[in-house]
Image (cartoon, rainbow, N blue to C red; front, side):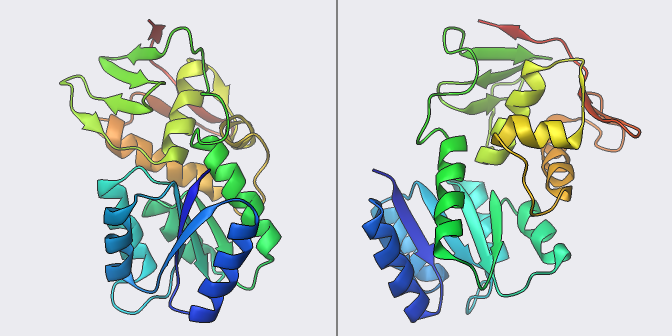
Length: 236
């Protein structure tokens, strides 16, 4: 049973969403602001956080950024603003998915299930479970723990979306993959929200992997093609 944390300053929305997800078999805690969020995470870390963008004090973007620095917990952001720039910034800050208000609770449920599935909460681990450690250019990707370690053995935090995208790259080394292929392979289906999500995720991965993000050596942009993971990969 997955545990959800819903963060919204609209108490009516909190009550409705809590009732809805309880009816669908989840345990649920709610928070109305950032302080409540941190207190809730200390009491019982959530498997997934549903986070409203417009909150009093620290807004959802800042909270998402801070969450990503401390936790690998998947985040779905909610907002009344549907501008593309807001959605892209949400992904930049570490959100795994984004839904604009007003929304159908059934769509939010579907997205929660999909994100949890990608995070390994509701399905077997991606990749070859018999060889759970992937090495490339001195880096180590642990499929069992869903952890990335640098060549000097520093653990690098990854969101669930970043992990799944990196896994796609290391499972298809040297192959040019289009944005649509990356979306399908990383998420299991085409994502109709905004195609730039892959570009944002790639940018975030580069900042964590590349020595020079202006001249990326591992994840190469192929003009009119997509992206290519250029380094050799081994499993153990």
